[in-house]
Length: 209
Ligand code: GAR
Image 1: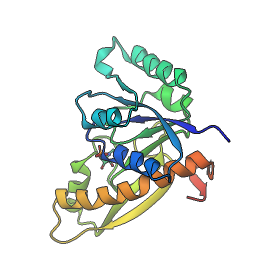
Image 2: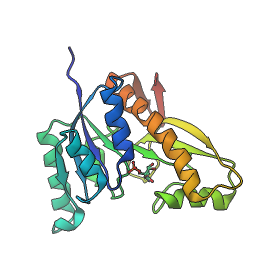
Image 3: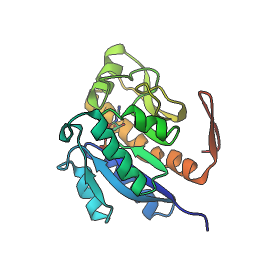
Image 4: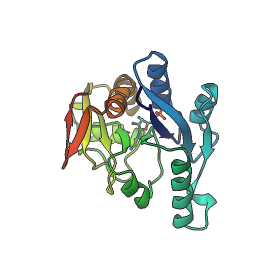
């Protein structure tokens, strides 16, 4: 049998996407080994979820280090020592160091709660994204799963799914609808990576999801 993909999950908050991935693994649909959960906030529920499933955790925050180099080196050495093949961002709200993006080129996956390239970029996370969608008057929103490159929310798109925007939506109700779509779909992109059924050609991700 081929070696299972070793994944590191990065999360800052509730980690409901992380939980959905764990559940898909438990259902036998997702074939990755969750080698470690890394987060900048050890009180985040994502840490509790990892512990509940005996997934090792690492609390690493940029503020713990003298400078960005030290922070980057710590992250890289932890990833290397665990033979990480894939990094899954699941509501991770800190910038990923450039050296890490370059080393794990097309091996870092992010989920964004809107249809990129709209409603993305610096400062666009969580509720702010949904509020921006509503303020603009967009009729559909959705999710984008993409590889991470040097620019925020710009890397090659692996999958997108749409969500209806209703006349009486608030950022909360839209977030809830979009989050369900995130949970139902993020694992598909992770599994496609793990199974090696997708490849990147320029900006395009080609293959079977
Ligand atoms: C998710 O909606 C995710 O798409 C979003 O944060 C939420 C995390 O929820 N990510 C971003 O906005 C990234 N720009 P979770 O912690 O419950 O998975």
